[in-house]
Image (cartoon, rainbow, N blue to C red; front, side, top):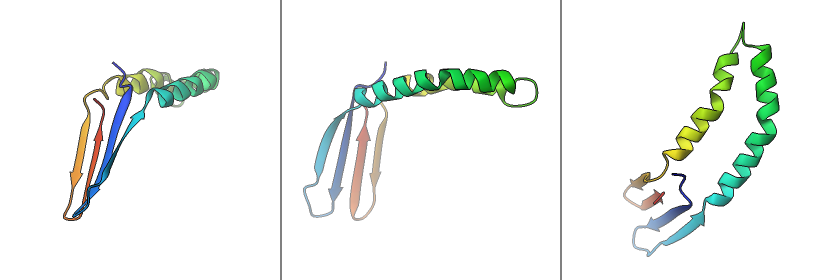
Length: 91
């Protein structure tokens, strides 16, 4: 399932830090509108390059994109070093 919320948290050593919940559904709506607008151009490019170029690969862009988005749920990125911490979480 597509994640609807992203938790973004930054903390510096010796400080409390802050965390923000971001509604990622807004990004998905904009990305969907952009993908629908670009679909005729991708289909035309795939048709023109299907025999000599990346035509069939261009047709796989949409399924690969949606597969990546679908599997973002549960992704947890936690980066730490001596001074900073960064957390990006798709619950």
